Amino acid sequence: MRRTRLHLLHMFSGIAIAVLAGIHMVALHLEEVLAFFGVDASEPTSWGAMIARSSQGIWVGIYIALLAFLLYHALYGLRGIILELTPSARKERVITWLFVVVGIAVFIWGSYVPISLLSS
Amino acid sequence: MKQTAPRSNYLGVGGWIWAGNYKLERYLYLLHRITGLGMLLFLTFHLTATTVFRIQGQEVWETTMALLSNPWLKAGEYLVAAAFVYHGMNGLRLILQEFGFLLGKPTPPIYPYKDALRKKRLWVVVMMVVIFILALVFLFDFIV
Image (cartoon, rainbow over all chains, first blue to last red; front, side):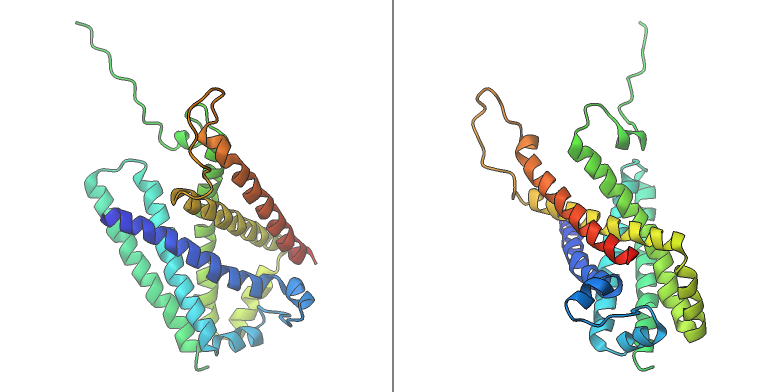
């Protein structure tokens, strides 16, 4: 049952990423399309625009949620690909725990930066 | 008595590409895997730029963004956008089919048989058309 739940979470995180990364991609890459709909999103990667986004709680929330879903989805997916190469049970445990540690470490660092920039 | 070693059916990474009689959906699955691994590689660069470099202040950020405006890197960025569109739409199709949607009603096995793959094929084509349109929208914004 545990593996079924992990797989369900993989699918759920995929849907969450499609929504959250979709918002991220449209806001940062579709300036011309957004301009057509009357939204001014020129130079979204400039320092000023980035700081303006970083000071809004909603964007920080989107980034942190996206990071959590992305890390789970990507590392669980990569683990699945590696496990297809039939490593031993011991290696499987090592890979699983390595991914858990890496995922948590990257999540802590990746959420610390936007939170610290929230007040800047 | 002569002993012969059993034939190994373990194909390793080679089995991703071909293990006999692969259909279109199997290659979409392979592309799903390749785009996933490619985006994971991009994620490591992207997270480095948006955390390690961003926290160092305006000057380092602007130098990084100037570096990323290189046309080759822009083309690479478009490939990531296209991979995202593909991986997302194909993933959505896989999720819907895993939960039993888009599969059509069960039919009795009367000749000429219509296999499950062909019943699903329409949705595969619809998904590919949507991916193509979304990839074109992103291409438009990357070249304008």
